[in-house]
Image 1 (cartoon, rainbow, N blue to C red):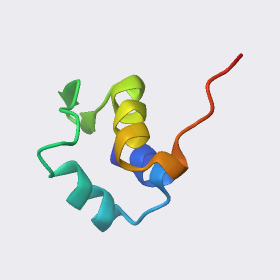
Image 2 (cartoon, one colour):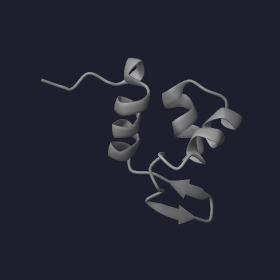
Image 3 (cartoon, one colour):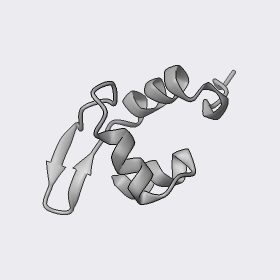
Length: 60
């Protein structure tokens, strides 16, 4: 959900919504009455490509 993405990226809700509106941001997995949801793997892949300094280290 938007709140999870704002926390993960460390940005405001407004900025997260701007990023989510970009054509290169992953499509939501589903849309629920409470809002859109994304698969964590899709968001992490986007972060790795577009915000590499925020990418999580893979677990060994």
